[in-house]
Length: 384
Image (cartoon, rainbow, N blue to C red; front, side, top):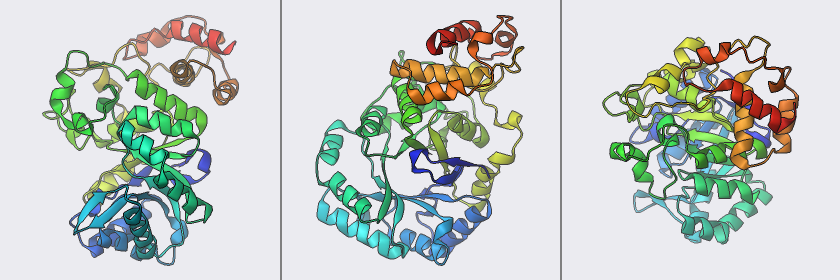
């Protein structure tokens, strides 16, 4: 397993994490065994959005005597009422659900306290301008939450959250299908295949999503990824909006090559599926490679946009072309050169200005990127 820094929190987290949907309609014993399997594979990052008492009990039992092995991302505003899940902004319910969370986990703190499921502008305004955020900040001040986060499927809402300065971690839905869609408050559109048949659907990353990735990268706001397989649709040719099936490793690699991403919370309904995701880190690059599929799929091929896949390498003069393009794209998305990105660029051994315009890279690029032009723009942008 490989580890990344969770943005400005400084926490070291596994590239592959475990989401908690796997525990729904299972037993405590099944859940504990799945967590044991995750730990054995080197996974240390876990998402717990579930309010179900027995799911929380799973993690309480699994963490007993070894709390330090877990980086827990657990959600506020997710309650269990009347025998069912409820997303709530009622403060009596929010407080009771959080107290229940700490009790069942038998822990004094949550590493990342996520404000649960904010997709609509009105909800965002009420949450960040009202008692929900205030409660979260109180728990942070009391040491019961170490870092604040928020989960959303809407990039516009995610951008606003990142800009508040209050949020260190954003749980966001990332995969190549969702990335081509413009923002929308209706999350269900992401899951409907008909959405991708609209005539104005992009064949590259939507600019608002690119802006989100750029902002998070430059501000140190970590992205933790949900829905890397698009609810399983991307793994099946007949359900994928691209008309071709991706492998789990390709989906995970796509997510992990997006700026700002720290960990991918892989869906796993069994130990076998979990171990398949965890094995990603040990796979050869050719098994992770998503470029051939995304550049030549029957529908929505990604073209003339660097996807940071690295197929342009090796550069004749040693430029890390994918990284230069990534830094330049991040700056373009924000309309400025953040100081952090300027520093990252300055640390490169060979800058874009060293390009001799031989064109060898362009013959290898599966996405038809005009790399020579991109290097010239990067040189102008960064001054070298």
